[in-house]
Length: 154
Image 1 (tube, rainbow, N blue to C red):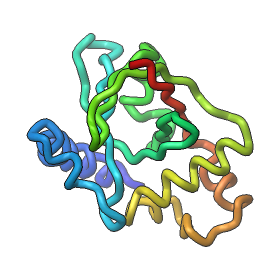
Image 2 (image 1 turned 180 degrees about the horizontal axis):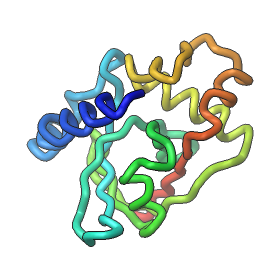
Image 3 (image 1 turned 60 degrees about the vertical axis):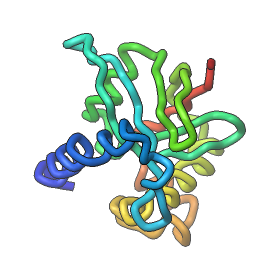
Image 4 (image 1 turned 30 degrees about the vertical axis):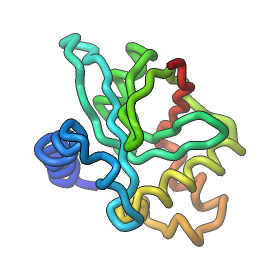
């Protein structure tokens, strides 16, 4: 996606999605069209300030997963690498967790599909239908997208 697309998402998230979660409307924001969203509260690696980033997610085996749709240049992803303890705001409430990158083939195959299916219309931005594509195509098209597992700690 273009720089314009990335900037548009950033502006929409800052001016609409984050304020809606802060006002308590998180449980009403997710649906199968717009996607299911959580807020990652990362610490800026350069500024040390708390940064709120709305991302699509999936829950699998008691862990919360998200992927960096813009790849390794996503600011929130770089912030997570710098400080692996983060806070999440899910529609049902907040929790803290530790982050780790996932490269395991089977885990990626299962969880990436769930995230893209949970992403609503944005799940199609990778150039395929996440509901019908083959596992091989899904993994090939998302090979450069970091996948993170957040293990809840409290």
